[in-house]
Length: 110
Image (tube, rainbow, N blue to C red; front, side, top):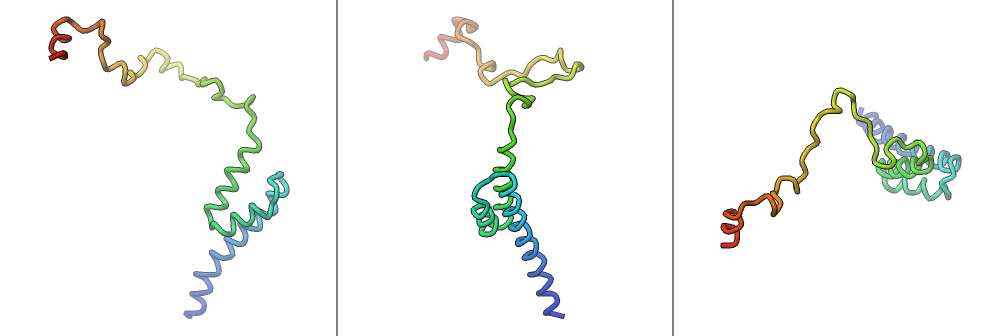
C-alpha cells in the first residue's frame, strides 16, 4: 500500500511536470520562440512557474496594436454611467492658493 501511495504522490506531479516541459518544447518550436530547448529547460528547472513564464512570453508574440481596444487610453463608458461626475484626484482635495482666504494664509505662516 505504501508503494502505491508513493507512486501516486510522486508519479502524478512528475508526469504533469514532464508533460508541460514536452509541450513547451514542442510549442516553442511551432510558434517561433527560439531555441525551444531554452524554453523547455526553463519549464523543467522552474517547475510550474517556468511554464507560466513561457505562456506570458508566448502571448507577447501575437500582440497587434491595431486591434488593441485600449490603445490611446480610450475606454468605453456605459450610457447609463455617462453623466456621472469623475472621481477627484488627490490634488483636487487641496485648495489652490487662490481659493484660500487671507486668514487661512496667515494661520499657515505662523
